[in-house]
Image (cartoon, rainbow, N blue to C red; front, side):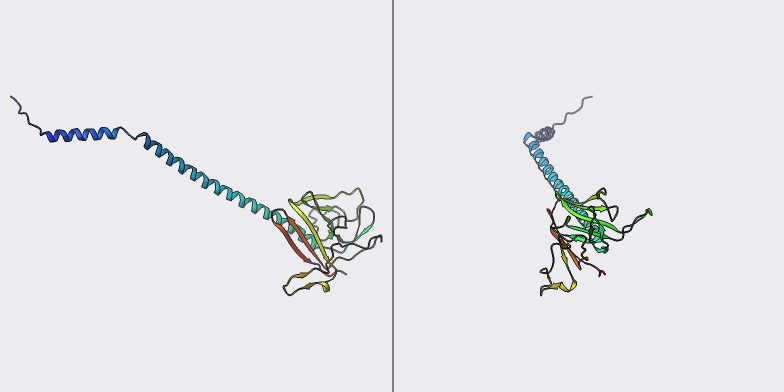
Length: 238
């Protein structure tokens, strides 16, 4: 039994050859130019993403450092404010055996500020006073707080030094003798003509005392924050 052959039109064979050629072309993949373009786009996106991430990380680090610096400044001002606001009019015997006023300071003094403060917490119940002798000084860009274990001391008593702030350029104090000399101009700015740079007893008089001032102004210049000021009004001392 013979099978009849069916004649296939020529246009069908041409179409089949065309489909095969197209499939073969698709199986050949990307050209070198297309691969290079894709790699260039990927590299550009990667660089852009890295720069964005690096900028974000730098911003976070800067914000963290600024926050830590602000915390240090606030902590230092809190300690100094507590000491100044708790001034007690209690003279002491200094390391040279001389009677020293409760408050002294200025460029001509031994330290920019020395004071006797109250409120020295005694959590252990040690046999000591709740009054404490404190001094502030500036050394090599560091703001130091010096505390003494006793009020009346000898040369053998060494202070305990605590660094409150770094990168400090200047530390200045001004003293107002009486509240009556406190004047404010029309712009609500303090008139400092009556403020004194030094708060000392008269030179040459041994064991002469001077009462605490009516107000103390503190100025600190930081390398990164500039000049900062604080004004403290003292209570009335007898």
